[in-house]
Length: 234
Image 1 (tube, rainbow, N blue to C red):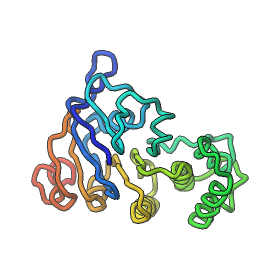
Image 2 (tube, one colour; image 1 turned 180 degrees about the vertical axis):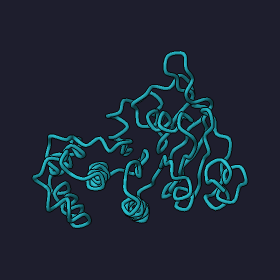
Image 3 (cartoon, helix red, strand yellow; image 1 turned 135 degrees about the vertical axis):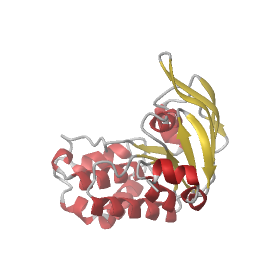
Image 4 (cartoon, rainbow, N blue to C red; image 1 turned 120 degrees about the horizontal axis):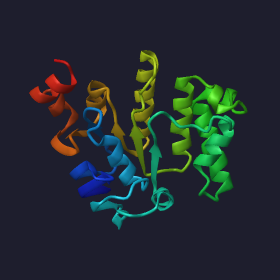
């Protein structure tokens, strides 16, 4: 479904991602783990069209999207749920959800999807006319995930979905993401909580200084001595 080959990304003269190669099969949950500054967020930005790569190739569903605009990438079926939730704070919950489907023209389908999300997250229905900036961190995360799903994506990119959440909400967030995958949506997730990420993932890539240094199933990497020492504190 998604193939990244030899990706290079720079900020000025600083090379943040170096020769990244990865693949994501349809229906998989794939995770990227690594320390801060390893190039994980930059990789997601390049895939979603927010950052133009310096070199390499990105192919999604057989189409080259290496230098496609963010709008085009979304049209093709990739939604990006960014780090820090990034809801529109002065817009209501409903208006935030409407922003997630601004490229769609199927009014009946949009209404159906919104009803499904309100059923899945009753607190969002209860607060549908409330400004998003007044929600708790966990509620904003539910809203950010729901906004991404309103585009009916084939693939969702999650960047640090558990960041800043209380432990009980972290578990709930991962349950939601696992549910999305079970519903047939492919997931790529960047996550600092390496143990939880590897437990969830079908396959994972370890990024260090912008390069992939290890790859394997979640179980294989949970048992890898380097990963255990560097990222799991074992």
